[in-house]
Image (cartoon, rainbow, N blue to C red; front, top):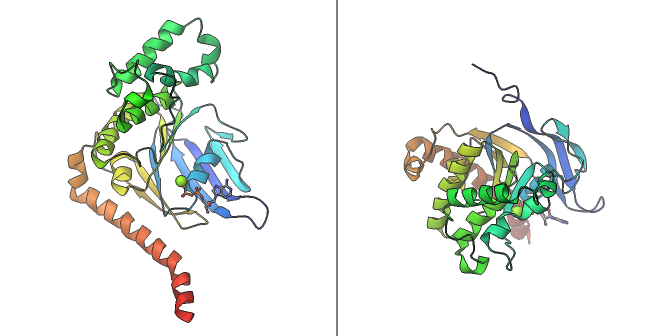
Amino acid sequence: MPVDPDAERDFVDLSSVSLRYGDEHGTLALSGVDLRIKKGQFAAIVGPSGCGKSSFMRLVTGLCPPTSGTIKVAGKVVTGPLKITGMAFQNPTLLPWRDTLGNTMLPLEIVQPHRSRLRAQKAQYIARAMALLETVGLKGFEQKQPWMLSGGMQQRANLCRALIHEPQLLMLDEPFAALDAFTREELWAVLQDLWIEKKFTCILVTHDLREAAYLADVIFVMSARPGRVISVHRVDVPRPRTLDSTFDPHFVEIVQQIRSEIAQIRNEARAPATQAQGAA
Ligand SMILES: Nc1ncnc2c1ncn2[C@@H]1O[C@H](COP(=O)(O)OP(=O)(O)O)[C@@H](O)[C@H]1O
Ligand SMILES: [Mg+2]
């Protein structure tokens, strides 16, 4: 059997990473983060609000340098914005004056080598974008403006835009948080299908523990601020997962375990304030 030399290598590798905003009196967002994600793995990051999850995403994509520690992606130390990533956030931020196809193709106008090839290979790139839009169920909506799409459809288009340049690493920061529960669950399946087909490495930040367990191979739980990884859970539920998987006792057990860890972190974070109130 052929051996993929990258298969066992850590694709994302953080060692003792800390981040303080501003000067030495500024907010310590992350402290001593150690984390490793293998190539092609689907990782989820969960933790209490304000623990530094979005800061972590900015560090990994090179949008902001760490105060100390080392971040490596694909074997190289991250020193500036990475080209091999695609990103999607809670709000789709589609350009209102562009249609779905135009929005999806935006990264091709910015990211090399596509930027130089776009003019000569326009037809192939359009075909690629159309195929991707069809995969996520947006066939027939290519010419619609964002305001003509539902929130779920906008987020489908947003995923396509994040993937059109075939990034090796997809970074998703609470991408489905603004959607209703039914739409959100539909998009879990859409994202899982894309990941199975395209085999990118994925990091998903979410506060929805069922979402984390449905999608991820591995879930990292972060402490309250300053954030660090306090536990790692492997989700050994067979794929493709379905909503039925979420009712499987083993799945429920994983979610409950993480839920109780986060409840404990939140209680510990609240404890000093409660004691102070008691003393007053
Ligand atoms: N650009 C910034 N400048 C200063 N402080 C920031 C900045 N971004 C985030 N913070 C602070 O860092 C901490 C972690 O924020 P964030 O990474 O957004 O957490 P999360 O995404 O887990 O909710 C918070 O206390 C937040 O106020
Ligand atoms: Mg955040």
